[in-house]
Image 1 (cartoon, rainbow, N blue to C red):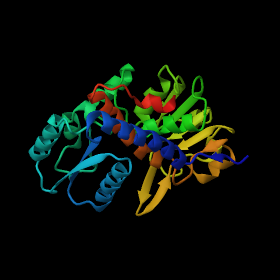
Image 2 (image 1 turned 30 degrees about the vertical axis):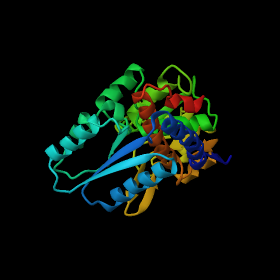
Image 3 (image 1 turned 90 degrees about the horizontal axis):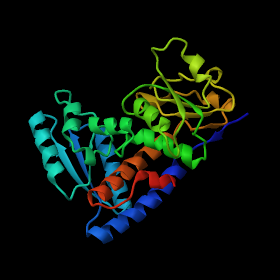
Image 4 (image 1 turned 90 degrees about the vertical axis):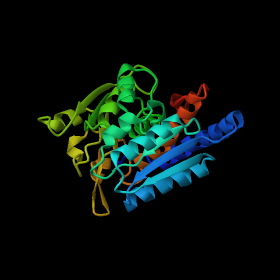
Amino acid sequence: MVASLMPGDPVATAIYKTLGDKAVEFEKKVGRKITLATILVGDDVPSLNYVNLKHDKAIELKMSYVHHHLAKTASQDELNELIKNINRDDRIDGVLIQYPIPTHLSYEAAIELLSPDKDVDGLHPLNLGRLAQGVGCMVACTPLAIQAMLSFYKVQISGRHVVIVGRGMTIGRPLSILLSQKGANANACVTLVHSGVPNLYNYTKLADILIAAAGSPYLIKPEHVKPGSVVIGAGVRYEGKKLLPDVDETVQEVASMITPRVGGVGPVTVAMLFANLTQAAYKQQGFNWQIKDLFS
């Protein structure tokens, strides 16, 4: 058996098509473009490149952006005041605080100060709490991307056993809640495991859908996977410029479907950031459009 690949680019392209249409519709209704505010503290080159990519994508989608670049010596008070001003600005629909920020600053404090309705990363404690309650909220981008990929490639989720390896707040924990909720493209039996669980692979071998999000290179090998399962690699670690995935490429010999080493979840994660932005813009204007409409 050789697994079918699940590349992210076709999924992202389909999402961007919808978002571009919604951006045009929004501008006609409101008289301005959907607008993203980005905050960068310091001069980290990879972070600057990441922010610039977001700006380019916003323009491509006929959206707008406002960028705020603080010096690496900026104080927490300066960062906090900037966030407060953005919260009050009705022309700003969503905010991205680029991580990491200098070590003398608190990223957690900055996120908590951010308006939950403008939190396009879906990391505000109130949004995480709303997700647990099963009510409308902004959801972290990578969990949304994984759900979107499963839907796009017509992988049945309801009633299936999903095993997630990794309990981080950006992927594992919110994803476990998202996929176990009652509703479309969810309703799974979800097991959340991590490196502290004895006999970890006894669990991975039971998965109909296995999602690796531990950031532990080559953690998942063919012998750890049930033949015919769907495998998604969402965790990576960098060694210099080399990307080291959680899932060994040889897993494709036993899986039925698998994300590629490069170009899997990543492109869709970026698309879901703009989906969060679009949902935020529509909600703040009292219009009815939600991310779940992408899956309908």
